[in-house]
Amino acid sequence: MEQTRIAMVQMNVQFSETDNNLDKMETFIRDAANQKADIICFPELCVQGYSRNCSGPIAENVPGPSSGRILDFAKRYRMVVLAGLAETSPTGKPFITQLVAYPDGKLSKYRKTHLGNSEKTNFTPGSELPVFSYTKANFGLQICWDLHFPEVSTILSLKGSEIIFAPHASPTIVGDRRKIWLKYMTARAYDNAVFLAACNLVGEDGAGHSFCGGVLVIDPRGNVVAEAFNNREELLMADLDPVMINTIRRRESDSMRDSFFLDCRRPELYGELIT
Image 1: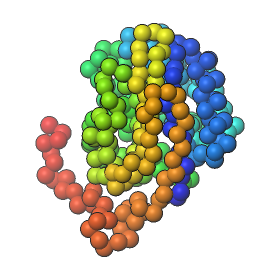
Image 2: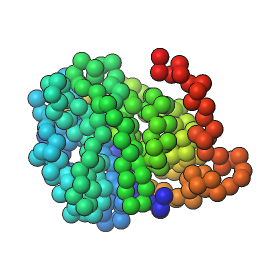
Image 3: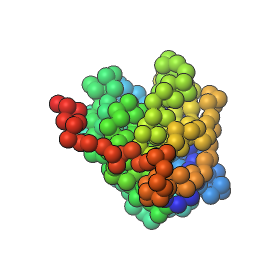
């Protein structure tokens, strides 16, 4: 991994106001480009807004109009753009998708694999855990509820992810987002020797939903690198220093403190995890 500057966005999204939301995203991207960001991550379903019951009618194909604009942003501002979009599905129930748009015109995506109980009747789960390559780092994605499944983080790390981006649409009603995230995200980062970067929707969406915001970046030791929990829109920049993760991943130290724990796994004992 090389030194990587990431931009994490907590953003207010108005439900179904897709063009306005995309215009706002471009403003954040322009600001991040001026600060030399390599990758920018937006929250879950930031393009059309998050709704468990109403996303189907406004879901889009990928490629499609919104993904085309996002890809244009990536090319114009020369950075990788991660953006959440409700994607049409053959089942009629959309995927919760995070687009990965590259400056060279490539467009990839991750579809949320673990749906919350309140989402299962209205969305379709994805079935793949891809790792995305960038010139400076490899990264994976886990969307909101996905983070509660440690196996996913482990698989992404084993497949080479050095950063896990975690876009959220977590409501205000859930409570103190920072306190909740620190309970498990530090463990995901520490156990798997990855940087973990989370962001959330914030504020009222015009359709009766309220989101609590929050941005948190954690290093492979489980330390907080950067954070913002101020209940307002914000672009948070974080520089990810590769020395720590490279020391661990390249086995450059004999100290147990620098162990890559996943090297010591014994998969023959873990069969019960898949039963």
